[in-house]
Image (cartoon, protein in one colour):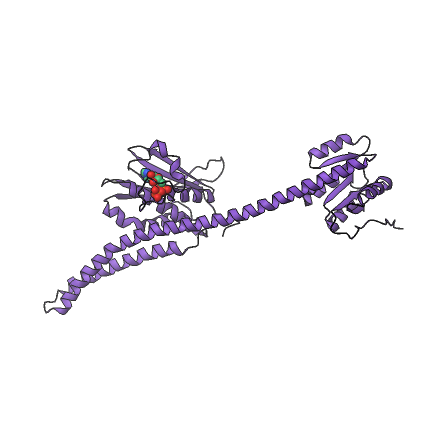
Amino acid sequence: MQHLDPVTTATPDTAKPAILIVDDELGPRESLKFILTPTYQVIVARDGLEGLEKFEACTPDLVISDIRMPRLDGIQFLKRIRERNHDIPFILITGCGTVESAQQAVRGGAFDYISKPYNIREIHEVVRRALEAAREKRETHSLMDELRQVNTRMEEQLADMEKKATVGELSAEMIHDLNNPLCVLQGYLELLKGSIHSKRHLPLDEEREFLDVIREQFDRCIRLTRSFLNFARQPGLQWERTNVNDLLRDTLNLLNARLKEKRLKLELELAPELPVVWTPRSSLQQVVFNLALNAVQAMESKGSSLTIRTRLVPAPQPGAPPEIELSVIDDGPGVPAAIRERIFEPFFSTKDKDKGTGLGLAICRRVATSLDGELTLVSQEGEGTAFHLRFPQRETPPTNAG
Ligand SMILES: Nc1ncnc2c1ncn2[C@@H]1O[C@H](COP(=O)(O)OP(=O)(O)O)[C@@H](O)[C@H]1O
Ligand SMILES: [Mg+2]
């Protein structure tokens, strides 16, 4: 016949904190219940297994459990509770000979222990402290959650702002770039118009040649605007299967006019064996564009060269597959030793207000981190600067990819 315990369920007073008391001995269990009932909602169970069932059913605010019990003892019970809920305060009851294991359990995650026979004042004090500590922990957690949410929102806003800053610089480059082919187009269209409207027609061959140039320049404009729009339209952190070499060629398209104007040489050393990998494509483009633009802005003398290199390099951890290294190397003035650490700070810039936002390298560092990679600087004053972005080859997108 089943033994009916009159108070195995909680008093329906939900405003009071709920305490689950687990003890196989009726006397201590009932006296604890008697001590705590006026102040708390009390639930009782006769061993660890029943304690677990009651715990699942009632989610109490505090658990008080004996150590020595049949079926599932207090220490095992505590372990099982911790697997379900990390924060619930847990108080152990010690009898003779179990003080040591109670002390051990406290080190392993129990809040405290009380000893039999009970001291009413001590029990009330320990319970009050345990509930208070749990409340503080809950408050800290919800504060942390709130902070985490604020942080996520700020990161999104920052990514958005960084993107806009790069789009701003890019559009300035694109407009500058478009100017050249548009002027050429205008010139050749005028020539053709002249030929059509005057009596002295140009030879057909020559007209065809003009049309070819027009077509070429027209294609160039389309390529430029397409590269720009591809970049500007992409949402910030979209992960895509990417051919890093193609991405480089595409992005550098936007700097061609500036390179030509400054008479700088562009050298591409792209490793043909580079695998197609998952990357946040538009973020990687931001890195390439910002590093290359910095290099172009830094190099003054004609004949200087900008080298863009990709290669596979050994991973820092032994046994891991080789990583991708993307380097932007210039033979410009170099970064003075005194500012080598500061250049990565947001808004740090040595340029005029209309030339630099100071965001470029901060963006690059953040993207490096999001790739689980690293961005390093090697520079010699007067000899040049190299930025190396190294990141692991990803064959699948990260689980939290947006
Ligand atoms: N390739 C480079 N050569 C020399 N100095 C550089 C180079 N790249 C970056 N810097 C320095 O780092 C600073 C910060 O760069 P960045 O974060 O891109 O901001 P910004 O280009 O808007 O100034 C630059 O102002 C410049 O002083
Ligand atoms: Mg910059």
